[in-house]
Image (cartoon, rainbow, N blue to C red; front, side, top):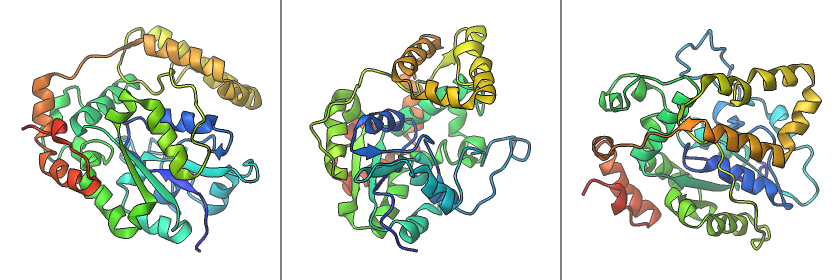
Length: 307
């Protein structure tokens, strides 16, 4: 089943700016991205989605995912004629089914990756899970203990071996289909990054999206009572969603409200910095992979390594 759909996908990495890119791409009038962020279709196509009872350690718990082709196509049904269609699913970077499924359904798709210093990415993921009360362990340096849940869950230690994952894409697709950015680039000049992506996917690259909103921030919750009202698992938002699904959808699409809620959530996070010692210890896990990665993507990554 070879199609020309979708036109582009962002394959990750998680906690490297993919959520910001998702919202910045959605602002462009020539781009259509579905409301479901992280459809995970090309990773989980045809698979049964597990409940949290079936998967208490959340090893493969992705209940929002789209696993059937017809349902995936339907996500894009509201795209206007001529719009470039794409999606963002960080799982694609590391999941073993991704490449074959892309070749089956969208062999000519443009593939975008954004990568972050692996120890920093892992710590951001740790804080993300802390924010959601889902920490794998209490101690970040438990990531150094091979064989534990940090290594078993693909979105933790394993995701950070970027050369291991990305080299498979370069071996399977025309390198001209692939564009790689660094999180460092996004921090230094976000407009340049998003406009480079616009150019790569073939839309007007002079468009300037709103860039100030910080999406999907990580950290420990300061006030858990306040989080029950405004957090990602807010019982108020859940009640509105269950009682007035149409109204909830409109609220989600309201950019002004989304900006205000994000700002309030971010203020309620305590962002504990990663210590130099911990960063160095965890980076040691990735040094060899980073050396290979810089040759693959032709970027100097010496600042990422323990030298």
